[in-house]
Amino acid sequence: MIEVVGVTVRKGKGYIPVHAQIEGGPYFMVEPVFVANLTVDDLVAALEKAIAFGHPQIPPPTQEEMKQRTDPMLAAAGVKSWYQLAKGGADYSIFWSEDRIVLYMSRLDRKGRFESDPNKTKNFGLDTPLQAIVETILADIKTRPELDWATTAAIS
Image (cartoon, rainbow, N blue to C red):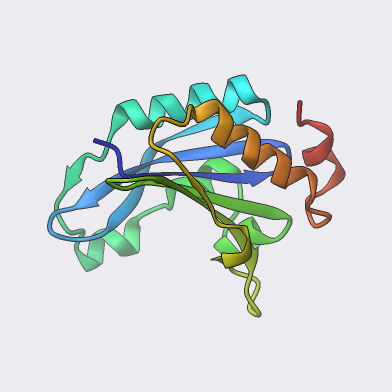
């Protein structure tokens, strides 16, 4: 069962990575990263692909593997750092629990990094269609002046 999926928005696209689970530990973004236009249909389709992929189990990466690793999200978005990704971007995380679905929406912290904005957290019932959650994400994107005009113009 899927527990978490995320969408990072930058320059008119949504980036949806697969979240593998490190054995006995946290989630870790891995390839593939699905890229979607900012439309309900495209985002739902990309999220469904990530959800179908699930959370592959992976062994803890070694220090050497971490040094050589190219972050799949940064590579997909064509940026070199998370700071660059956050600048002019937005991040959304969807979590499934036993009794609800929670959508966390980002803001930037003082250092320009994504962090969850507690004032924007939305709770949904487990029977909520993915389309309704995507519509909430798109509505939020339209309110963000920090996103460049190409991003907001691409939403439909």
